[in-house]
Amino acid sequence: MRLRDTDKEALVKQKAIQLLVQQGFEGFSMNKLAKASGVSVATLYIYYNDKDDLIKKIGVEIVNAFFEAATKNFSPEMPFAEGLRLQWENRIAFTLNNLQQMECWEVIRHSPHGEYVLQNSVGDFKQMMGDFCKNAIKNGQLTQLPLEVFWSIAYGPLYTLLRFHAQGENMGGSPFVFSEEIKERAFETVIKALTP
Image 1 (tube, rainbow, N blue to C red):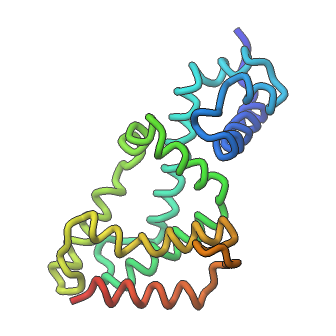
Image 2 (spheres, rainbow, N blue to C red):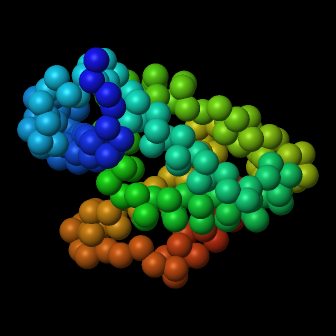
C-alpha cells in the first residue's frame, strides 16, 4: 500500500480548486486533475475515493475554514450592530484572503454536493447565528424577518460587492475595487434596513 505524501496531497487540493474554478463542476475530472498535478490518476485514489469524495472533502474544508473565520471573536450576546459589523469584517477578511477558495465554494455550492457540504460543515455556526438574531430581536435591536429576507439584507449586499471585487468590475462592466468607503456606506444602509 502506498503512503500519503502531505505535500503532494496539498498540491492536488490546490490544483483541484483551480480546476473547479476554471472548468466548473461538469468540466472537472480526475484525469485533468492528475495531469495538472503531475501525478498519476492512481495516486489521486490514495487521497480520495473518487471525484465526488474529493469535491465533498474540499467543500467541507473550505466551508469549515470560512465558518471558523466568520466567528472569530464573535459572541451571540453582542449588540446587533457590533456583531453584524464583526461578521462583515471577518467574512471580508476571509474572502479577500481566499478568493480562489471562495470561487471554488460557489462552484461546489451549485453542484449536486452543495447540500452535503453544508450539512457536514455547519456545526455550531447555525446555532450561534440563530442565537445572535434571537437576542437582537429580544433586545429590540433587530426587526423580526423571515430568515431568507434577513440574510438577503444582512449579507446579500456584502457578497455582491465582494463578487464585483473578485471580477474587477461591476455589473455594468466598469472597473470596481472594494474599499473601506464602499463597505461603510453599504453597512450603514444594511443597519438602517434591519433595525427598528
